[in-house]
Length: 265
Image (tube, rainbow, N blue to C red; front, side, top):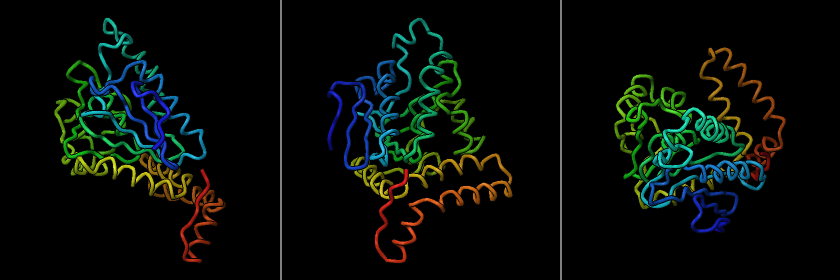
């Protein structure tokens, strides 16, 4: 795996094949967000989005945490700061970028994911969490509401009752329980996390990036629709994908009983 950032940078960027891995790298502070980290993270995601050779992204944390949310000691939050401005400047574009990536994004949650760190992980398409990891909606403990997409994501992932319970109590949710209630994709043994994340990224990278991105968009768009409208939207998306090179390649590979080589993005 090739790295493209200094070892002490707040974000490490590595590339292996078609998979880019972004590692939040402030382990002494449980990888909490700072303006300096944001200054690297959003451009790194944008670079992956702009690079046609990248077909999957993995996001993880260094050390014993994934991300403890906003670092309240960061100069961006000095004196309490303008929290709304911080959200508008950093978390809104970050969440929007992750949710609209042209390739699948996997969060490999290796430890505590709290506050914006938890919701940043949940913005990803698939969340794998180490068994020792946990998720904490810590906002109520400092007089705030969930951000980084949390108010939208939580009720859609686990329902209103659990969303309000998690948000109001700020209780720690172990990874196994997060798996059980459907908050995340999968809980795995700690020592298997990174290997499973890379293997999953490799599997997804071999599929049609365009179809996977459209799958995310179609599922999100269907949530407020009635059944007939969702069916109509499916037909529209299938019509567009059916005219793509990847569909032709997929059918040809199926008929020839060979692996497909997808190229659309």
